[in-house]
Length: 250
Image (cartoon, helix red, strand yellow):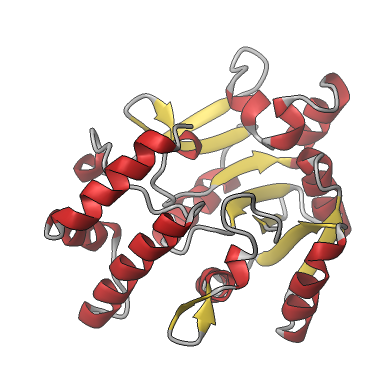
């Protein structure tokens, strides 16, 4: 199996337009931070999959100038975009990452990749409190999916449905059809409903920058445990996150 990472990215965010190219920490924007971290994972291609909409021309130019791999496909049929990106770059096992998650856990991605190498699962994801991590607000984890499974979803679902917008939704929602495996998250994250480090809104951006800057001042290579400890020491940030979680339920 040829495993690669596909980062889902676009400029037309409704609540925070252009967020992935906004300067975030020091001179780097959100997408740069994510990609620079992902390139630390040896032996896998990193591909950014965006859409053909003209508002992503700036994004493509930025990425190509950095020497990144880019695929442009459908804006709304994200499933098709992922399938064609994987085919274009000759990969058949996909680690899907969202571009607005600067706190992505590289250790977790490594676990996904190693598990995928010896598994026949269509889908491998992290589960927390009996919920797929992709449906949480943490922004810590990726998910693995087989290209053949995505092709089967495309053949059996209609355009305009959640299956086509949310790439893996149909798979983990139909365990009777697809082989799904789950990885349990660390115990110190179980039961936590007060962490939101995925970035969708201006408040998310401010909170994430506070946490990221604070952690970087302590250690260049902070861990998930460090993130939780920092938040527990900064109640004001947690309260802001809780308010934003209640307003942006998934």
